Length: 298
Image 1 (cartoon, rainbow, N blue to C red):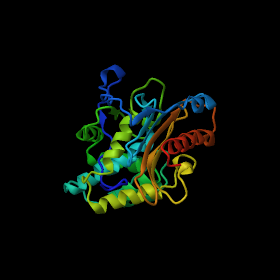
Image 2: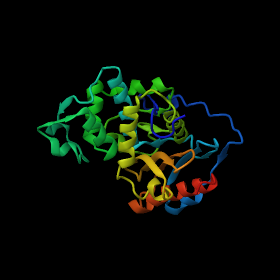
Image 3: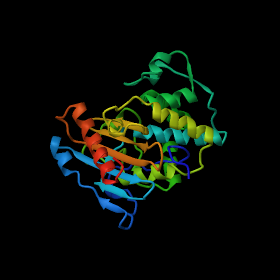
Image 4: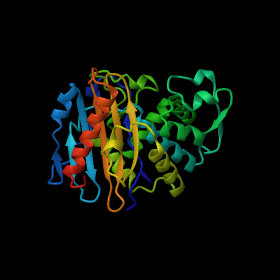
């Protein structure tokens, strides 16, 4: 089995209904000695937020869960999955990695570190994917969804991976609103964990595409105070952050030691509206440190 963000399908989504009761929930896995509750209530109390967390040691199979079946806005974490969907289109000859797409002023929305500089000229599909994954460029993500046929096509891609709980409803930047009790553009931490786990051993992507995606996830400079801050010296982290309103602060990824199996984590923190960005980041880092210690890997 190959470990890393190499070769795996990712999170999937359902429709864009507005009533949470209408959405199917993934059947909760049967409890076993490898799965345990992981109490993080004191971290929530620190700033008054709500924390969803799931971790898996891919060597021992031990899992740690906290609010893992509750909904959290995924924000920009979806961009890693968008890259997977685009790579699959390329492998089916429905897209070309080197195809040039013209970037216009009409494409511009907030947070466009790459695309804003390209207005009036073109970027390739590869450049758009890298911009979306590595620096979380919002127009790049919207353009990729547009180029695959729009949000309906994007939404229909997710269930092909067996995840009927992640909800795809809107484009950037609206999907970041993260309002309380709003099920749109949300996911379950435990489902995210399962999707990343699948990613580690699937052969859906070619080795070349595996390597590209992993390189972007490793190179991403975002969220240095989140999972990165908890990653032990000498380990490698491939991750994707997400940030939105209502204090939404997320990070999902895989922490790989120099030898041995990696640890995968999904962390979603919201509601701590009075906390600073650094304080919210620290909650995720502290949860990750505790998880590593609990798994005997810290």
